[in-house]
Image 1 (cartoon, rainbow, N blue to C red):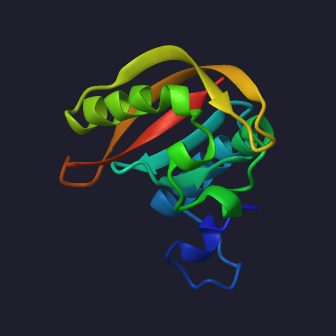
Image 2: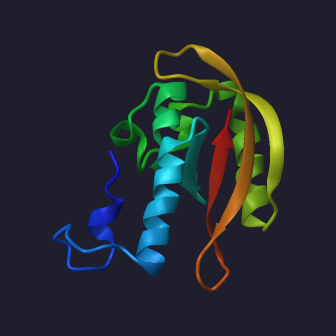
Image 3: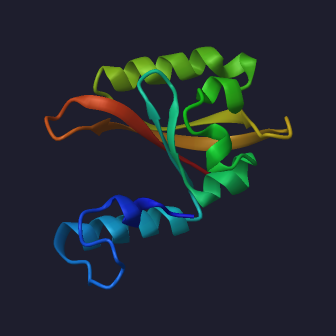
Length: 136
């Protein structure tokens, strides 16, 4: 379920065509939501801030179950938590992580091998405010 349209500017009655930035933002949100790749974002302290349907399918958690929670609490096995700290430090320093192979833990506690690409998320001023992850 996407809630993005309700927070975008406009009349909000659903009868107006979206144009310009509104239309582009909706299209981009639809691309992410319909992707077969698990795409999610985190704040610099590791809290999950967005979660698409493929993330739900891969990890077993709904968005409501993980939003605001630390990835370390939910899907990173204890043996991989230092790795996550290194990734967060690298992103905070302005560097991406092309991809790395690792292990994650599903909601049912089974382990899954994944390849993850990590990129910094920047605000309008260019400051790093979080990170995006694509897992496959």
